[in-house]
Image (cartoon, rainbow, N blue to C red; front, side, top):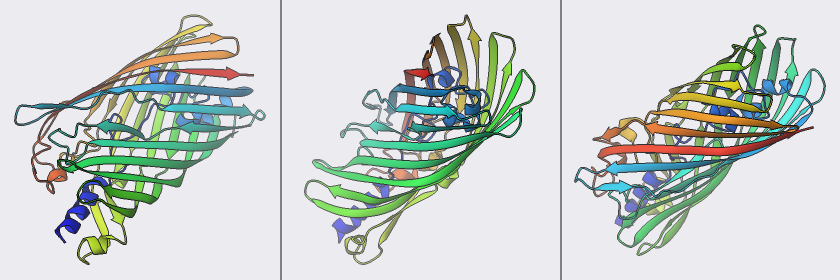
Length: 409
């Protein structure tokens, strides 16, 4: 019975199959390299195929058929300074989410397109000898969003866009139980959502944009929890993860023939991620007949993001970009853990674009500086043998760099 209760506690802590770092919560907001070069402030400019992600109404600004593909390398560095004076450092690895877009202008009033992006994910990897190894060692989530859209011109000044999000998610999580014994969760699931956008040309110089993406409930019915070592047990598990609603508003101002200035404000309903309820027929036996569910409290908070950036056209071929972003963390101190060692952060970006006939190449770099965070009493480690393991100071930074190539005909 004690082993059964212990395994139920393991599942309670470990079935957090979206708890990952390096974006706000576990979100990856940068889905285009031109946009990232301007701090991601793109909802009102929206003038390349990635408008499918930022504001689908913008694809009516594009002529003909266009393709765009790119990759973004993310290199995070995370440190935990423990109360005993030691320091744990996460494994340093480059994560490479990719994006692909295709758009087609049907006529003066109608366009369509399909985007394939990775809007949530990334990973953390802490040593099995770290002070928090019984809370988390390895965590990885892969998320793909298949997003078809249509856009319609309501008037010379107003366009609208509508789309569907089909989300596919895979998760792998590891942790230590004791020396030589580990735990792993593998799961996958899918869900449906919707998105919409508006683009309004207020004047010849000023455009205003609005974009909304609905929450998506991902049903993880195909999951397995496995204990290696002395316990050596495997259990089927089912749960649901609700990905948050997102709304963005922004403006794009053409200050001159060469200079464009953008600003966006974004709100994310992370409160949808309040708890995870795990279900398994084996929980009854494992807990001595007590229950067939285990609940993991998260209680994340809604957040704001501010973005600002600009683009300067040096010539018909070259553009220069720069931007800034301030991003709040949704993770409260009381539910902090090392699967999501998150904090408020600032981002500073630089980018460039090159046009050669029908080909456009965009490249950008972002430096993310996370606010130093000190944890003194998180509930996430209360079920472990060392209930103060998460205490200490957390420092992090990340480097993001990538390139995208677009072609139109």
